[in-house]
Image (cartoon, rainbow, N blue to C red; front, side, top):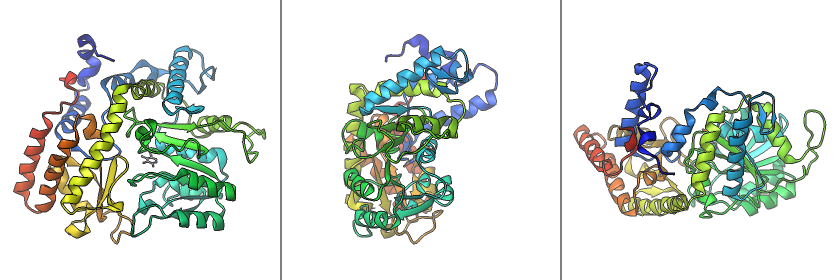
Length: 443
Ligand SMILES: *Cc1c(COP(=O)(O)O)cnc(C)c1O
């Protein structure tokens, strides 16, 4: 949607606020400038459209709406009902699925809700090991998922860096988990959902696909779809999907409850009812209807041709970046990427992930240190870094710019103890980024 000049000059968008708390608004302004002049390579980050941000600062934050559209515990819900139903309908269209819940406050909340809906404390779950690219909510001992459930893990193969499906199958058969979780935070390859479903059916497990990272590419058919094979699909809305910070839960098909799971009143229900109840009242109170309004806008954007082009450009940029990195002898786990991110093992460069992240930060190149599979260093130090292209693709970069980004990154890493060079690169980065304006309407 095209913004009019009038809207763009509204106080709500100046980021200076109208209430006089200049202390906070000045800090927000500094964050805007930081985002503007840096190269953002954090694979989980992105820049929403202006209208998505606009929707997040609106009067719906004032509204309590416990329940679901048409079934609320408070009066005055006719407009939040309208916006939430629109978000649900658009999301179903985005993924061509039968069920969608747009209320989870975050990706972690979405996963917690699905687990609460179908598992009992002490049940077994099987997920990808955190140190191999998995996520905290897939059974880590420091997370609810590892404290409430008995977590078992599969890994990636040391040589290929690919998910070890044989091990996954073997652990599924010996442990007989109630749920197998697939999806990851630092895995650059596609998933074989059909193969996972096959063993799940054999042992009587649910399959949950957490597509928090690659959701945007899946939405556009650029990666295989989990919907026909996995019982539940969860995602964040703020990574490749480029919406506001939040979570979602979906099912390709709203199926009859196969194991006769009961709701708290002892009734066997459709899976959609169990999921809705697990979000509210199970794990959350009032939904963030202002954020749901922003989700509705971003789902509308995803349905557009522009977003299709964007998703394709992400994949093209990731390919170009991988090629440029490999040409400079950077070791990519699994040798490349199918999606929007790559994991780089820096051991052949004799640099730790921590040192790389901290030094690149000084050059305004932002990324995160990341454990590589079978890492010999602690999670605070790590041997690797994770890089992703969704944010720089939103900035307008194309394949040809990936070489420049890699050159700048490499210059820092090859001169990691040379403060003067790092400083020079920071100036080069700022200069380079001037050709990709970010939120010019904000002045
Ligand atoms: C980012 C991520 C999450 C968590 O999302 P939050 O919104 O930060 O809670 C869950 N699962 C995976 C695989 C993720 O990458």
